[in-house]
Length: 117
Length: 208
Image (tube, rainbow over all chains, first blue to last red; front, side, top):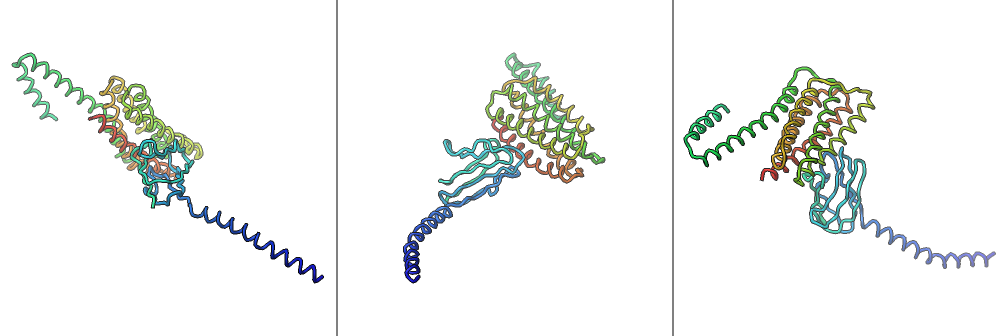
């Protein structure tokens, strides 16, 4: 009986570092995910809300169209990002890599800005 | 305005005593003046009838409001379809495409709401006046081509959106009884205001 308890104790001691290693790896992954957050821009009343959003490089931004009509999100620089049509009730997500001024190509008076801190 | 016509009459008298080249230039100026006056008159009569209705004493019912909302949006789609066919200007075509899509989207949502509420749109003085104004404007737009068409179309869009915004703000929203209909009209207002800013932007380009 005493031998069995000792054997079990040794097994637990051997498994502990292995389990710890797994848990550390998972934690790293979680830390990695949490370091890149997702921010939201709502498209409503013919405006990007907020009009200017400050994020870290690698963060994601999701635009949600809560308006009455279709919109787009288009980098004002040529060859920049472009969402294509975001229909009413739909959304579009992008990873922010650079600061940019953008607009809605359907409604050019609608303007927004991404600032990388 | 009368003073301006009197001034033109005096200038016309001077023209009778001038040489051929001056006469030709003067005839062209007179023609341009009357063409511009005709456009201003045709466009303004359509809008004046709308703003006169906005100042009426009788309140609109929800079925009447539904009819005005659908009619006003459909009219701008009709104008846009002509512009898509006749214009060669990329900015004018782009604007017209936006008008056709946005106003159709508003109609779809308005129709869905009135169906849900069980409201049957009812013709009224304002919707009839809108249709009468549309007939005049369509005639005018169909008579133009090239840059003259672009100018007539975009000038009309600026004036039309101003008139419709006024109607929505002063009559449709205050008179709407149903909360969902009122909310829909309140949501349409920023769309119309954005269209007006866009139209003014295109108007500047067309007038360059």
